[in-house]
Length: 378
Image 1 (cartoon, helix red, strand yellow):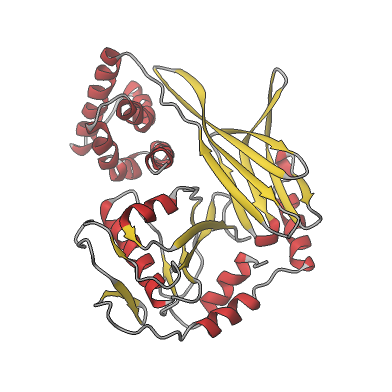
Image 2: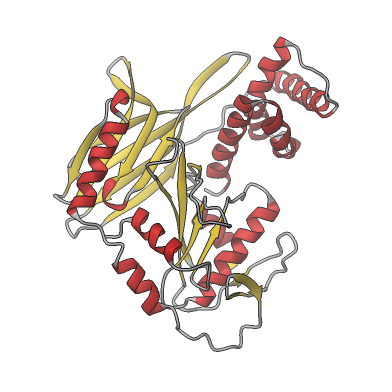
C-alpha cells in the first residue's frame, strides 16, 4: 500500500514537472476556464502514459516546490465530470493528503490518473476555448494539442514504478501517523479502529447528542495507512456508523431562510474493508433540495442582488445587511434549487466580491459551491 504523503515527496523530488506528473498552486473547477484546463491536463497525462499512473499535485508553489496547501476538496463526483467531458475517459481519483506543518483545513491534493487501457483520450464536446475532438499530450511539462496518429512510447513506466515502490507504507509510518493524529486532535475526542488487522482509521470531532443519536462537528477522519484525509469540515455535522467491516459517514448540511435552519442529509460515504488487504469506497447522494414559498424567495433573491450592487459600488453595508451577506451564498443556492436559474450565475459572480469583502461570507460561498458540485455531478 502506498503512503500518499511519501509519494508526493518523491514526486516533488523528481526534478520538475514532466510527462508523468504536473503540479499546480490550485484548481478552480467551479469556473469554466479552470474546468477546461483541468480536463486538458488529465487528457494529456492519460495519453502520454498509457501503461502507468500519472499524477497532479495541487497546493505546491511553482518556483520552489514549497508546500502551501489548498482547502480540503471532497468532490467524490470528479469521475462523473471526467466521464461527461472526455471520450475514453481515464480512471481519476482526487485525494486529500495532510502535511504536519499545514493548518487543519489545508491539505495537498493528489490527482491520480490511469489511462483507459491505452485508448486515446479526447474532449467529447466544446468547453471554453477547446473544441470537441481535441487530443492533448504532454510535451515535457506542457500539455499540448497534437494529432493522435503518433506512436506513444512507454518511457515512464520504470520511473513511476520506482517512485511508487519507494513510497510503500510500513509499520513505523502507520504508528507515527496514529500518534500524530491522536496528539493533534486531542481536544476533539480522537479515536481509532483497526479493520481486518491491517487498516487503521482515525477520527475526531466535537460530540453532540440528540436523543439516542450521536453526531459530530469539527470532524476530521483519516485513513492512516495511506495518509489520506477522508473527511474534514468546520461547519457541517456527520453521523458515524462502524462495524468490523465498514466505516460509514452520513453528512448533513445546515440550510434555511430567515434564521430558520435545519439539517438535511447530503451524502452517505461507506468504506468497506476486505480480507485481501483492499478496500472500496462508495458514495450515495441523499440530498433532497428544500422547497420554499416563491414569494419569499423572490424577496430574498432581490435583496441579494441589491447587496452585490452596493458592494460593487463601494457602498458601506449596515448591520442588517452584513448579516444578510453571510447568508447570501446559501440563499442563492436555495433559490437555484427552487428553479431560479439565474441564481447560479449570481452566486458564481459573487466569488471575488465576497473574498475581498468578508472572510466568513467567502467561506460560506465555498461551502455552497461544494454542495452544488456534489449535486450537479451526481
